Image (cartoon, rainbow, N blue to C red; front, top):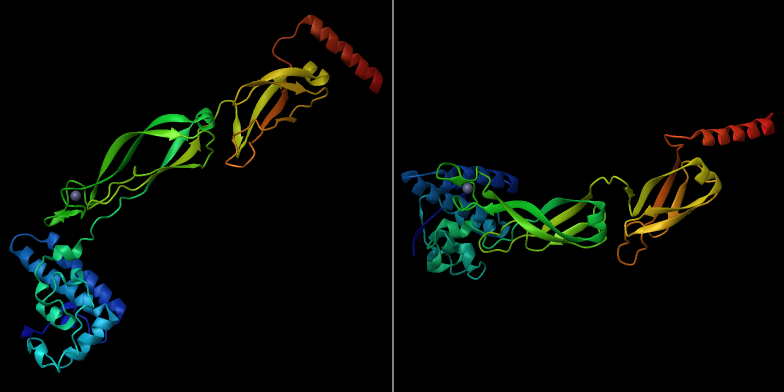
Length: 337
Ligand SMILES: [Zn+2]
């Protein structure tokens, strides 16, 4: 079998001593130039042929072992000469079995005669060498805005998400014919908007992640969908300020409640409780309701609720009340003076 010698260095336009980096960059440049999707009509066929050649050259020159083997052979040939592996001193240079059948798809007889593969080589289109088979879709991440109550109690929430759907017009390549795919604008995917029902576990916190298996981007080539990750973000709450697992609220007391102490009903995330205000409570003081904050993650204690005291005289005061305050002032003046 006499096959035509192929000068892989010439195909990639690199010198014989080119290093890995140079070969890679030359290959990339040429592959971009000759990608069959970028050409049409009669040019397309030529491009396919070129693209195949480039890939074959790169397959050999980018692999140290293959390149060595090729160099040993190639040093004796000039481009255009016929190459008869049968006269090469037996089977020394053959290495069938080194490469899987897939590696040999689209490669020339010349390639096959050096590296094995026999009649199968060159029988299939470049595409089979180019595509990568089933691929899992992308994982997507979204922010999930929840009220504090939703995070605390959990529940079901409808959520509109969009993810990339493989563009069927260009097969996800982003190019169609000689130009950018007009269907997807060159991105290779079409945004797809869906509504999904999310089950929110009770007790999620700011920054908690909810994983929805198989709700991410669509796979290609029959591959499964990716996953969807929802990152919890808490909406500001009108009453509670959240810090980690703890919540804090403000409680306005009258001066007499603060001075003499009292029992006051306050709300917590779970239900209302009665809070004991000790006599002599100061403005700005924080009273703690243990375990009334956000739920702890597995094995962890719950957060606490803090009640920050603010003392306010209120907007109206009766004459009788004012009289009593005058009496208090007199008492102070007598004590201090
Ligand atoms: Zn497209």
